[in-house]
Length: 146
View 1 (tube, rainbow, N blue to C red):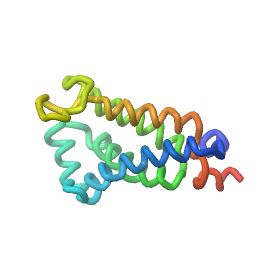
View 2: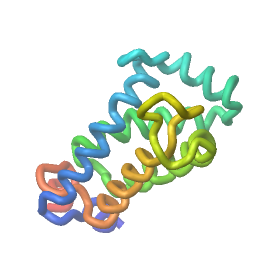
View 3: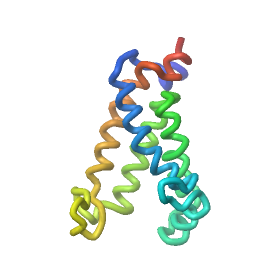
């Protein structure tokens, strides 16, 4: 079981994909957990998710954990396969609950009702590559397997 989770190819593919996902998710997670980058912090985000979006508290909590702890874990290269799988589930959930009705494209020119889901598909694609390949070079996973 340990090998299935932590085994990684010692190449740049895993490194680039996990860092890309981690660095993309971190600001979003920091908004939700710490209130950085104009976010509402943990309490405000939990309130928004549960009161406004009517998500169950466990789902709201998991969104914050995946975006914050998951992003830091991906940057470090720790359990990248698990965090990538969770990022896929997260992005699919975000698409289905918030962005599907807005179409594919991001709202670059402000003429749509909201944002599309193209960004989320990119994160899903990177996550699939990381899920298959592992964490790559310079990762905690590569040290665990040795």
